[in-house]
Each structure stands twice: as structure tokens, then as C-alpha cells.
Length: 164
Ligand SMILES: [Zn+2]
Image (cartoon, rainbow, N blue to C red; front, side, top):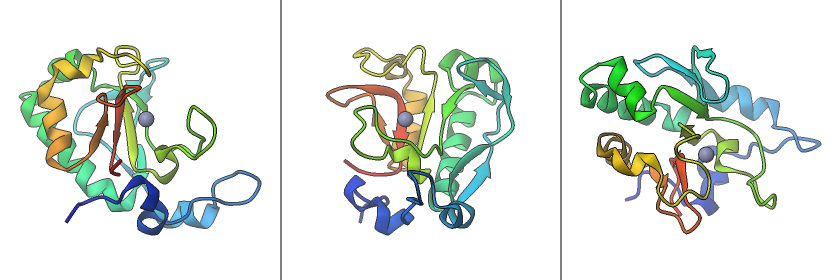
């Protein structure tokens, strides 16, 4: 059995985050979104400010923590290696927002998606840098997270705990 729901079924698996006036439902937020941190130092990908923790859905938080621990081991627990791979450049996790085409909510709205190193893995880039880093790709794949780098319009910065 698949570990994660199909994208079309995320409401029943993660709950419905939609509140009033296009905002997130505050009760859903406090019941479901928790903070975790990778074992290495991270900074924001857009202005390089230190980040203490990452907001994700509690149902995929343990899994993401496992992914992080595999990546950390694959990097020989070396921050330099993590930096080289771009995994210190945090580009967002839980964020209640529409998809780029503006019709549906992004998977980030359920807290089941995470982005790294947006500069070298930008939306639409057909040769994302993460394609060259099996140590990261395999870690996410081992927990059945879907990578956006293979999509028709690639989103190489993006992983999600939801199936297409
Ligand atoms: Zn994303």
C-alpha cells in the first residue's frame, strides 16, 4: 500500500486546511502543523537568514525527519557537503497558497511539501541540479516522497508526501 495519498485525496488524509476569506483554518493549523529541524544548519534560499525550524504536517513529519537523517549520513555528517548539495538552502514547506497557475491550492498548503535550493532548481528548469545528487534523491525516494524534477514542467526544488 502506498505510504502517501494521491494529490486528489489529500483533504481526507491531511485534513481540510481551508478557512474563511481565502485564509488557512486556524483550528486545522494548530491541530496539524508542527515544527521540525534537520540535523544540519539551514538558511533561507532567498536572503540567507538562519532558519531554526521547518513547519510541516504532523503525519509526514517523522518521515521527513528520517529523510533528513539519511541525507545527513550520506553527507558524512559534514555541513560543507550539505552546502554543496544545496540542502542548506531552505525554500519553504508549509505555506497556505495557490499553485502557480492559480486554480488549486499548492501541496504546500497541507504542509506535505518542501523546497530546497530554488536558484539551482528553479520551476521549469529541465536540468535541475538535484538530478546530479542521488544521495538526496534516494533519501526522499526511500520514504516515497515524490520529486518534482521529473514532471513535464519540472519543479526540481520540490518534494511532496503525496502521489500524482
Ligand atoms: Zn514546492
